[in-house]
Length: 199
Image: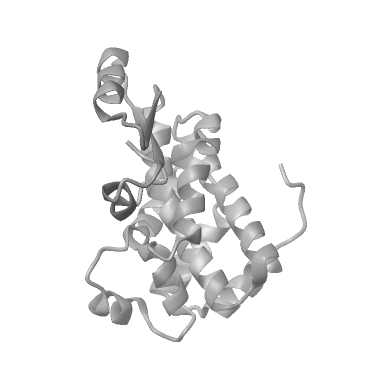
């Protein structure tokens, strides 16, 4: 199950949607039936790989969105970053066997929007803190929660190398987290990449 699902909001009865994925359509439909309420809409999918990867990989993009906020890159810069980040995680997902369209759904775009925009996002918070000169170990020590995007960055980069997928945003995020590259320099390096076609 994945989607733009901040638990605090769901518990308060605020409107939300999610996607439940699995290989057994009867079980997936049963889960949908059990979980759906007037305020919580549940969709189904047979793309288990895509839903799992979308739910994990979006946290990397949220780290970068926090960096964009912290560097005051503006709405255009942040939107461009999020869009290219979504394209990047979709490339990795497809290479791993996911359906491309899943990344345009709740487990992809939906979760990316929530995680990159909300003040409730732990990963966005970490990215913002990195722009204030704090290291990941310093931020981690002060947090009461887990920021899943940190470990996911490492795992995604290893997966991308194994599958031969280029992931410049993930690589830059890794270098900021683990190799002391400054967020400002990471953004400049991404912007200075050679020109190319969007697709």
